[in-house]
Length: 103
Image (cartoon, rainbow, N blue to C red; front, side, top):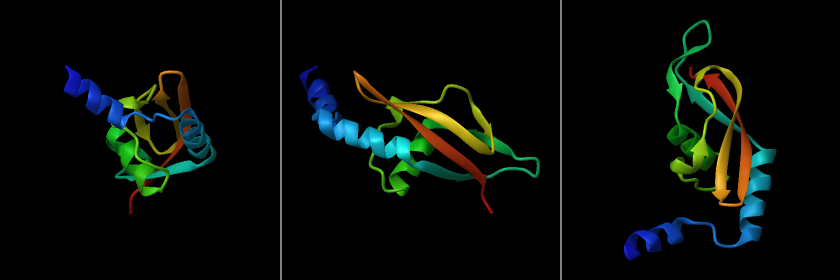
């Protein structure tokens, strides 16, 4: 039990100022996701929290835990969508996802 708590604490963002700075950076930027889509703009599958975490990391905005990303409605079409990220227990960020068809 103690090892689980220690691992969880190591992944957590400890300093509140760092979490606020990350929140501001995430909310200011649009995260671009390239996914396979059909001609009508419908995706083959859906965007998952792990895809969002990978896109945020690729954009250079930092590492996010996929378990802390919440997508309210399934993303199954290209366009702009929103997801929430729980940075700390008392701090959440809303990120804008720009889903485009991969070429």
